[in-house]
Length: 260
Image (cartoon, rainbow, N blue to C red; front, side, top):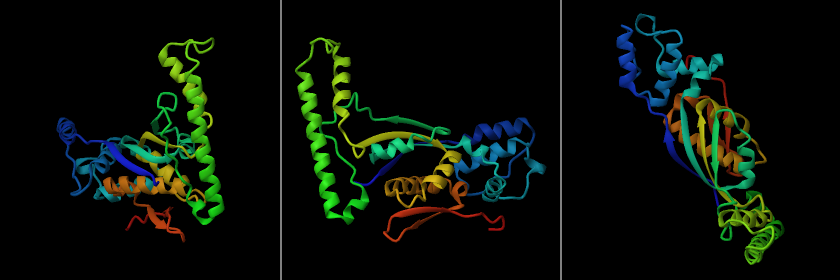
């Protein structure tokens, strides 16, 4: 099972409203043909800080303008652009790491208290394929944990209404699922909705996209990069997607050249 990324939300630039603002200010904006909506949001956000429109507008293209912002470390305007993703086929071990990214991120994850996991699937770590013995041990442990989950759940269901479990139905289910989920491994597959702004994603790519020992993290980072790079290439032009010797993806960051 490999991570799968669904892009379910994005920033939209209401150009006509912005152009109306410029008319009220008796100025104009020389737009770059082909610039995407996220790229234009970043550009106008930066230009509003100085009202660098009309005669005050530099001859830089949208891409050059954004490249200069990034080179100067002025990335706060990138926070105005966000994307929302649904991630599936990822492990809870992965999401434990992912949700540590708080600034510029928002998360909504499948709850094991409300969703019964008797039919749970599991994410097999890539490196297990190199050792038949390790893979066998992993699969055995996963099967045992799933069997234990079902046994715990079924056994506790029979105690409905007894002291300590004399709860309303919603809370009874929460209680027994909480007990049963304690035996499930970090490899349990989960689903999570994630919203992140462009600046936060750039930081995520920098610190998470190149960790040699974490294949799943690099796979997710690569999938996210492919999605947003297609939407706003100028915002991520200093990142390059490559592969390691085992064929797994890795992200590398390079310095942008203003004359590029």
